[in-house]
Amino acid sequence: MSSPGTAELDGLAGWTVDLMERLGGPGAGLAIFLENVFPPLPSEVILPMAGFAARLGQLSVVEAVLWTTLGSVVGAWFIYWLGARLGHDRMRRLVLKVPLIDVEDIDKSAAWFARHGTKGVFFGRMLPFFRSFISVPAGTERMNFAVFTVLTFLGSLIWNSVFVGAGYGLGANWHRVEPYAATFQYIVLSAVAVALGWLVVSRIRRRLRAEAGTEV
Image 1 (tube, rainbow, N blue to C red):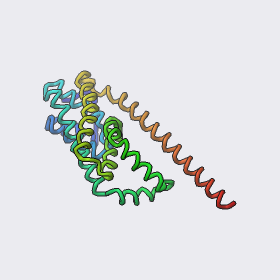
Image 2: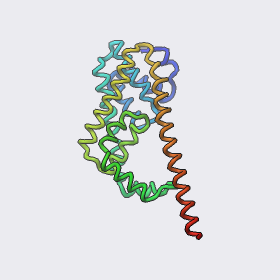
Image 3: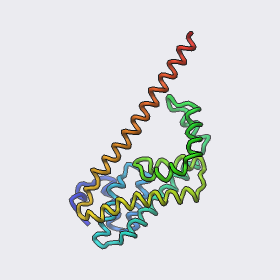
Image 4: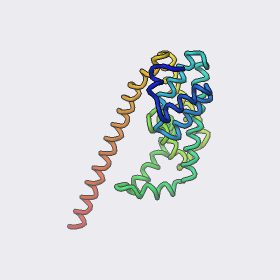
């Protein structure tokens, strides 16, 4: 199952594509499991390749979507388990070591997740980078496991269907999905960078005002 984009892959990405070529649907599921556990692996490469494999008749589109979604869910289970093992109190102590983070910030984040965690898990499965990390607070806050599983399955099903479908539709040109996926990633990362920048500036200003008030 070679194509122009395949020759450009190397390292872990190339290994996962080779795994999928050797094992078919289960290989695609395993590759997506690894992508969830190790976020640098590109699902935007693996999923269209699964669609291309379906286009070649190596598996059906339904199999490609279901195997990759199963891999997403099992990967999310693993990260959920890590979060649950870490626990709320230990996570709290770790986060407090981060500069400019206060107890109030942690409490607000926990309160937000308690109110909006279901939406966070569902939509988080369709956002680059957040796809994996959203399982951590779900585990530390002990979200109902069945609810977490259903939300993860549904969110992953949508994300995977889009990219598998794109790979199936584009055929040998499956790699044309990557520039669009990269643009989406840049938008998400830019939004995160702006939010973090605002957080840092606001925390520095607050501390400067507090220090000035203390000196007076």
